[in-house]
Image (cartoon, rainbow, N blue to C red; front, side, top):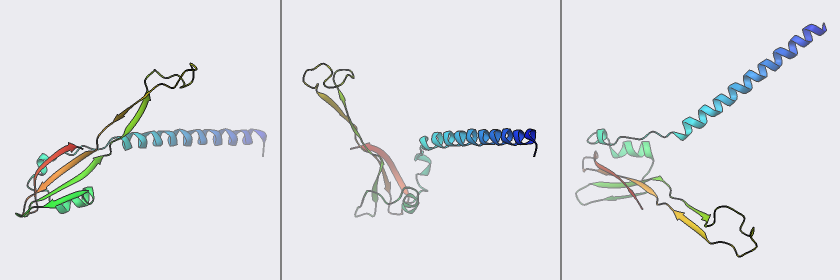
Amino acid sequence: MSQAVEQRRCWVSRMHSKRVTSRAIALAFALLLSGCASPRIDWSPRIGTYTFDNAILELGPPDKQAKTQDGTVVADWLTERGYTYGFPSYGGASLFYYGGPPYPVYTHTSPDRFLRLTFGPDGTLKTWSTFMR
């Protein structure tokens, strides 16, 4: 094989790998963005037609549920786990940077978020609400 043909093959191979790499990066970025966006469900149009079985298929088993004497089912699903994080009170330098005692650490805690669906005796959705605990 001539040297020109070999150089051409190397050039084509490099261009192909650059295209594959750029496509892989674009795909990873698109997947990252789509993973961050969770669809918000509008529960109001589902009142009267959405059943408890639909909720289990879509949301999984509820975290808590109760059935009243008249057959109404109240079920709670955890939609977002709360978190706790701490931060120093001084602005970001190392704890022992100034040679003194460590600065106090402040913490922030957010509550868990829940979805509560109430199903009537006929098994269809009657009311919905969100709450934090």
